[in-house]
Length: 160
Image (cartoon, rainbow, N blue to C red; front, side, top):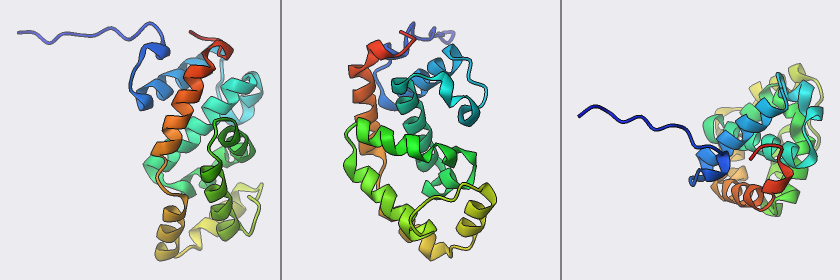
């Protein structure tokens, strides 16, 4: 029996699973807004799209490589957008944990300079890094909150 090929859903909103839904929605938003570089082109997104994409980028990075990885590259320039997004989706605990992480690693505020952030992160010892990662906790609850928020605010996205 030959394998069957499924065609992709007509809309990200038809995807039931949270992770694939968020990935498809982020991708559709970035494509619709013709975003080439999220940090440089974030202004092309409306407020709801910025919340969704920035929080999704943060959560995807944390799930794959840890909180420190988010701050290691230029996506950390979106930190204020991530904080605003966590507030908007109703994730105050995650926002507070992220604030504590930033306080412990960077002394309170995220350096604007990538090289400074990288040097600070590289200076962490492995046991400190593991402890700080545990401080942020499991991002799955925030994924659920973001997916629920996105579905509730679907009318604000320029894609369907």
